[in-house]
Amino acid sequence: MTGAVEERLDGRFARLWAASTMSALGSGMATVAAPLFVASQTDDPLTVSAASAVAWLPWLLFALPGGVLVDRVDRRRLMVLIDWVRVAALATLTTAISTGRAGVALLYAVLFVVNAGEVVFRVAGQAMVPALVPRSKLERANGWLGGGTTLMQGMIAGPLGGFLFVLAASIPFGVNAATYALSAVLISLVAGSYRGSTLEGSDRRSVRADVVEGFRWLMSQRLLRTMTLLIGLLNVTLTAAIAVLVLLATERLHLGSIGYGALFTCMAVGGLLGSVVGDRIVARITATWTIRIGLLIEAGLHLALAASRSAIVIAGALFAFGVHGALWNMVANSLRQRLTPAPLQGRVGSTTLFLAAGGNCLGALLGGVVATRFGLTAPYWVGFVVALAVTAVTWRVFDRAVVAAAYADPAPQVDDTTATPA
Image 1 (spheres, rainbow, N blue to C red):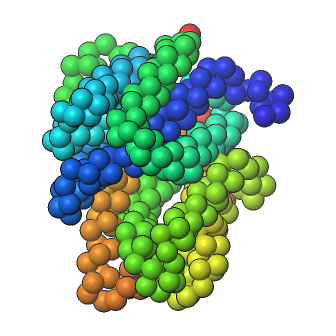
Image 2 (cartoon, helix red, strand yellow):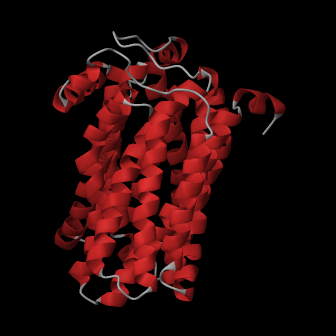
């Protein structure tokens, strides 16, 4: 970092970033090790695939109520508590595997606890960012957070988790517990109070009422509403495409397992590059054109996957998509943090996360169904048409003046008292 950046992104943010990055490393290793452990216990495809379902289910169950919790309590303390609960769960699993007493049921239970915590942890972390970072540096901060996650989960955790599992099945889970413990310590060192709402009696409101309040506020904001619905819809087509990518790689591109893995590496490298330089790109071409060009890149990825038989072309498209994904998340998160009042940060962020996760789950199911019924490239043609359609429909929504106003205006206030660091 340059001296100016270091002055703005101070030690408090650095500790949040380090905690998030270490947590991403541990979570990534567990994601790789979990199906390997299940496969070592059984060869039943349904049992093996159930591990992914158990990992996704908490995102749908706890995103919305988790946002309410984030807005009611001190977000920093909540993140610390979540980390220590996950340490205890993973330590139990690690011990059980080491002593030969672990079964698939215990793994499922631990995965459920860990991912339920991840949902709330992520929402709380995003809600803390505006209190730690000046508005002018939100893109840089979100880029660093996204880059750390991409590096650890997309490039390091996979091979490292697989290697450690070969040494001993318990090691990846034990390392995951250690990363969560380190994360808890780092977050506890972030000075300040980060309570979302201090309005007397707010804790006695029903969870449903708080969820509805956050949802209604989000739906009343044209710019944020459009971006949120876009993320959910495009996640359907993207996840549908990724779900059958292994078949496209082997049957159409004639790649082996290494080549298939290299495709994901290209996307991860693009994501890392976008995270590092994204704030400068956004500043140069504006957030409006970052969003608009990103939608065209999304359409181009689906077109390449549908029409090309060249591994090089598809690898290049995935790399470009990785850059776009990093920039899109950077702009989307920064706009939400800029426009959302502090007492609503958790609920608005969790609603976005809920819709995104719902799109992922639906897309994972639809990808196989569409490919089976209409052919291997059908999900990609569908994705191409959908991406072009949403680009045309939303082009005017992301008007340059509207987006510029969002960057210029402070977040609107509500009746609750906003949180500020001590």
